[in-house]
Length: 229
Length: 147
Image (cartoon, rainbow over all chains, first blue to last red; front, side):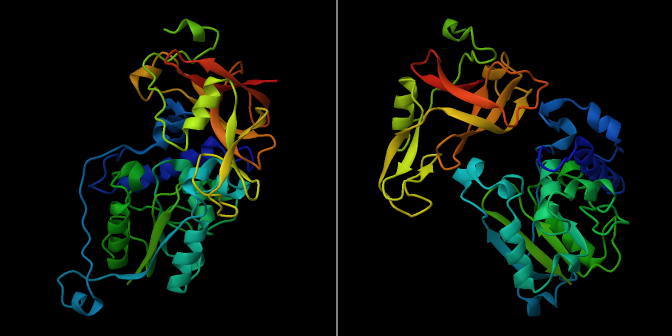
């Protein structure tokens, strides 16, 4: 915020997007629409994080069945494929406070971005839908920058301009994410990526061929995968 | 309530758990109890580091010594905590947690509260000086104040 002029309106745009997506998801915990004003009126937790910038700890379960591609062909559900998976650290976690300016104002996912896109042989622009770990709204803004969907410091305007909506250049968390569907620590993001690739989401994006799932940002190491159909 | 902390706004924390010490950190707390700020410094290449680690991140040497710093620095980033995570903090919110970049320490930063500052002020860049306050549990806590 100090360096790039990112604002609480930008954080609020992430929260509003999550609720808008969740409105049509019958499995979502928070389906009521949210306005920026309501976001700004929620109580302060730790400046600048307000209540509605934070996801809610939840009980739940999710399972993913992994098997060989040739076996998956015979299963009842249409398979999706792991195009790449990676774990990477931009810095030593114990040094988190003493890292470079660029790493400090980041989700610690720039090395992961190179690894996960490199292994899949794709670029950020090839991703059709992103499932980014939204435990806190500012981390989504910085994840978008780290993965190269926008430039460094441009994540705020990117989300505020609607680029992460269903009609935007990068639909983000169409299930409502951790903020509005449920906080299953990324597993529900894997499930939504799978639904998007099968064409069975409640907020289906057109012609999804590649989906990015980003693990928890802000810590080292972090993880991610690209799923494809 | 600890009378020793009455002059420090927002930091008298009854029930605050004393620091867990282990070989890499005992020297830090011993110095703090003596009113001195120390961080590790590599014996081979001279690079400072913090939080304590067994090996130098710059040259991988395992030999190190405690290095006493002046305690001056600048606020790099900060937050104001307004919700108490445990009962011990219920009486002291709001308080700030600042990331302070220490002078003469190869960019080492640490987290601490800066006292005597206003909630409405942008603290980034504020010049601060370390001091230590009695916690009443046998230890002293690192704090900073503007200079």
